[in-house]
Length: 394
Image (cartoon, helix red, strand yellow):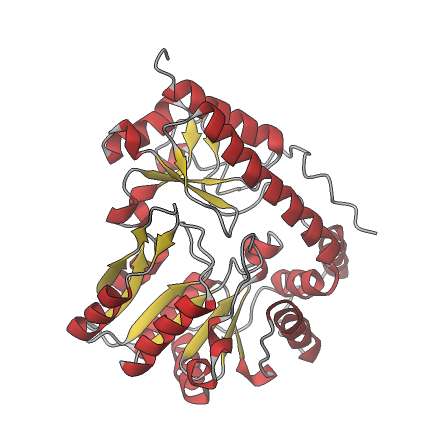
């Protein structure tokens, strides 16, 4: 029976080498900030995962490890049952993380000086792995519509592909940080543009299991032609709170693309993954569903709580319509603060450590991203700090 279902429990993560809680001062923040930035959850993992890891530890030997067919079957069954997408065992490539996979894709499918396109504001490592590998970063800016949702400027997207001879596209699906669930129609339009212009697509679908509005569509599932040009990036790290396990599952149906991708991994000197991450991943997909269902309901209620709190207490702050992820995108532009002054207010006055919108691209200036995958008491404290800091009398 699943034991770890009390998501109201506040667990002290300090002094555990937690990136979220133990590195504020090292990263230039006050020691007393409340951190709701990096995308992991403040919840215990499924008790089945804990038990499986404890059993692995009790064995006492932690040598080189790899996966057998049952590992593939757990991942495949999850994709098939939840998202309607099938792939073969040979299509699966394991990496220590999706950002690592993005970097390998840059190396595999572009040359130094060639162009990679992204849709900003977007998860900031997209830009980093492009620029750090001496490629040309091309951005098509998402448009915030009157419906309080972001939209793709398809004309701008294709024009920039043509003008910059773009060879590779990083798609965030669902989109972080703007919390969009892209519709099939939107994804097909992107796909048609990429097919017309011979652009390979890397689809980061790490947040696919946090869809609250609409339905997630695996980009590669839309057609055999798109399946043939897509690298699908998946990981249990968000779904089951296993980021420290360092396991991602990359699906590449096209054997030639897969060969080139594997070549770059071999060139980086990487082979077998962490044995504990592999054990945790297989167990999560086999036995973690009760925990997942309870967790996703708790996060859904936290998102609604955040929306109601902001509407009632922070009328000048706009919460962008939330469709996916546990990362809420907040618009502070009505306060007229510079990006630097907004960051200072959040950090030094509210004593909150959020992700500044400007790290997601220039179009993110004036925004902040807050992680609501935490106990309700912690979220209430954070929003209360924000209210106090923004009060005219404070």
